Length: 183
View 1 (cartoon, rainbow, N blue to C red):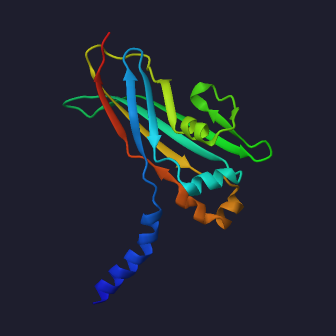
View 2 (view 1 turned 90 degrees about the horizontal axis):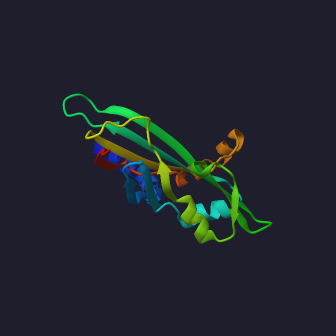
View 3 (view 1 turned 180 degrees about the vertical axis):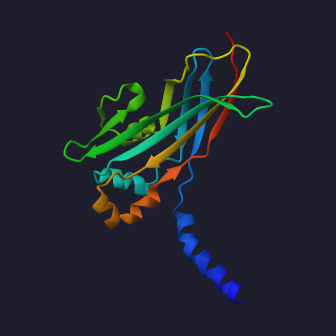
């Protein structure tokens, strides 16, 4: 009986966290070979709460991770390269516009006024170069792609006051793409 009560208490405590969990995934993945460039989109990256947090002026950042491994049949896979980049948005209510910074395009901030355009730019990556110095012709490789939302970048003291904003954070599962390098 004690175990059942404990299980119920844990379930009630964890249920709200599961209900708040954001489901997002990598879709529309494409890669060119050679040169190795990847494009993809993150579906499910925005919900009403995240949009409201951004509209209130809080900055949001999407972090993207790409890992490339040489696939070995006998030995463990060998890391060939890792790339990380970030998309950041901050809303300016005075001008009713969003300021975006996309690391893979040079990191120079630019502005858009349409919320749908902002969401599309924040959640998509187009022709990101991930060409390492050397790929062996005929060898098998695996690309892994993942996205995370660090929705709110607040000073340390405010993080303690607004702890509930962590419910907006999400991360996708790894998306895998296997290919054989050609010359």
